[in-house]
Length: 273
Image (cartoon, rainbow, N blue to C red; front, side):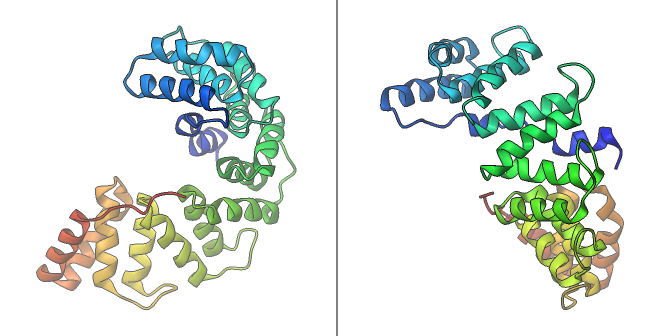
């Protein structure tokens, strides 16, 4: 995988994870006030709520301040200021800050991309069970970026993130079982992990699950069920599934196609854990 594509694959801001409460009730109220203001688009109010807590050493507020500066919400965009806030929170072992620092190092926000520094921060967060970092670190081990290439270790890390419910990790675990990367090939396990990610709304995984159901690859063939998942994949923007969906629709007939469309209309993703 090209480096730029790898960065795009794992680049994600953990904004939602930042808007959580700490144990201290008064501080939790202020964090929640800031979260409500952020959600409403009142970034100045969010900053006003979080800044005093951040200055006092609250790692969640420090992380949130970093998000404001990185995204330019209520302030001028300032990657250096964002990283400075995340460094403060990471120094208190706050996993989302460690994760975002790793992403910043990968993006080259502190100079040329530094995958070794990214791997260090991902490792810190992954050790705390932070699924996004487990997945991202696993990708680095697969590609040998910032660490020595180790497909088996990459598989182990991505498997942990998949078991924690991260859809991107579940999808990638399906591919690793399919292709025998870091693990013995297992078509049944590949289908099962594609299906888990598909149930959480991952469009590419829906396409893979639909293909396998239509062709009986790792699962008993069920073209009607396959059409349902292929329909969801196409609706989710998976253009690679368009031709197969059309072909399977012709195989199963108009009635089955109408039922697949109706089921797709009612689809609700399983919440990510």
